[in-house]
Image (tube, rainbow over the protein chains, first blue to last red):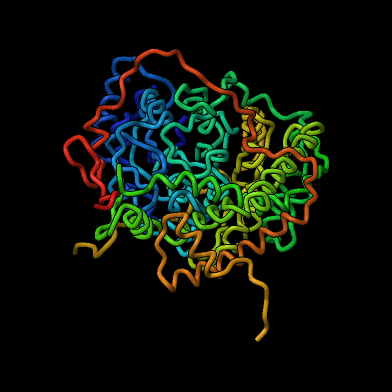
Length: 494
Length: 101
């Protein structure tokens, strides 16, 4: 089965002539047909376009003019990324029929690299959530246990890779929305440094925190995807012109002598003991590979969540002001005047969580509260950043759990604050703009994946990938597949 | 009944909803008040930190002004930009009346 392969294994089959992009895309589409009625990772499947792009890739392989390691590789994208001519909903009713007139820079770069788009993936509305239950359309389910959430907000992107419904996907991470679903779904998820990847064509949530990154079956695949999407872009003035290294070249260098910091503050009260046990074992495995570990302190960790829930909603309330029913998106009928049209449109188009964050952000920015909330949160952001600066004077990487627990049951976290607490170990990285990756680091007795988080210095994605790769050479967690029933849905013909 | 100081009143919820251009039903307002109250109480822990003399961080990476050469470039095609309009009138977006007669 080609769908079980990593992207680099698939590319090798293409080059040796053992398989063609059309064969792989056909297998992936059949697997989506068989499994997605259970998982519901996809909002849109771009069947005809995928087959057309696959045929183009076939021709390139026949002619020997391939475009690189991702040529012909089937991918899928979180629906927060604009795709020209393909609806991009952001998981929201307000953009349900929005068809972007241009491609996001990452999308254009993936097309240029020859990647084949299978479709667009489900997400919490406007990337606000940690479970994908806040999608305006339907929740996505965790391939490891269909009664549980895949994490969020990039739940569709994580579940699609976990269930072998795409070789690689892209998600976005504002407060953990790549790393947490990667942990819950048993795949790799990487948030690059803020500025490493262009955000042009990414529908904005919180502009000082949002970053695009890959979900992958292994480290080598993540390196290939990052290679394509990384680098400055004239269309995003916050993208940074720092040279992009060859991410795959350094993977095998090993981690002998690498200094790893273990932050006590990331092993919090009330964390799942099975998670703690797995992470301690993973740290021991990294030590065995030659890394040296030492305790580090990130004392403002516990304030990160509170600062985030001021800063992110504040930026969101400003970014989402554009959804006014004028130029694109939903417009509610029956308005008395323009203001009434705005208010009715936003009431009809936004879900409960988006309304909550818009209200929270508007409140935090409103007269009389600005300094106490937004001003103070930005100062706390500085303190969180300094914690990391100090730690990285002594260590090369920080190693920690990705989340305090494993995938929870659907409907289990009704209280918004309980949902927010899921992100307590991923948010500080966004506040500091650092790169972070979550890789499979074990399983619970019940067979649920546990995420191991690595955090690096700004623009040092290569060190993260190298350490993660070394770990994957001596462990097999990332090779485990969820037990999925691919038998056809519905009554079998007699 | 125990009285507890609330972080946000129903009147404030209505005021913020007006600022945010968000119509809320009566039931939504009360629920919103209750949920924002819980979240704001949690956020209050920020006040416990002494941040005297701490510079605020708006972006983790220092931002610099980025300029491109002042040369003409084509815009996106007008028809494609208008294709998503909920109410299009020729080459214009039509909106409800703004100025009273």
